[in-house]
Image (cartoon, rainbow, N blue to C red; front, side, top):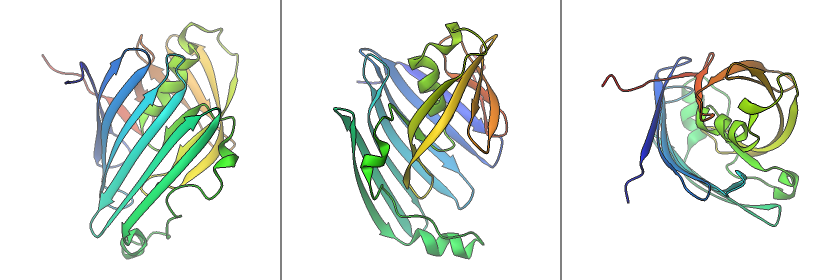
Length: 209
């Protein structure tokens, strides 16, 4: 069945875009495609689903470029993540040829390190920053009160999965600050909690109709 809602972002850090189809019924289900020209040209296709409480239940990602393809699947059950990964071709060769460092392996060597993470975060995707905003109801929360989260972060294009700590702080007027030990930026969201503007990464594009 076709999904009823579409979101589209244009990248502002490099040539690229993200297109997402989704529905909100007993949780959120989204099917998206990320296209990017850096660090090497690649396409990343994903499916993500949350429970009614907004907790990420599953994420399936496939990234591919010239001469390589990688996949990773995450499933959350009883508070623990199961992670499976696949790899074809040689992403490292493409990265080195483009003047970049080699990538980590896809997946996670020790999924127990992800225990306590209720959100998955696909790197460089504004949709995945929207999920904690919506799950925690941050647009209606008290401004200035920080929420520290543990997330299962999926790096792109390597699809290496790491535990990461992030801090989400509502600022009022549909803005939310996200921060880590080395990074901070202020998101602007729509009334449903989906990111409109992620400075230095992406900006929502709406139909001209």
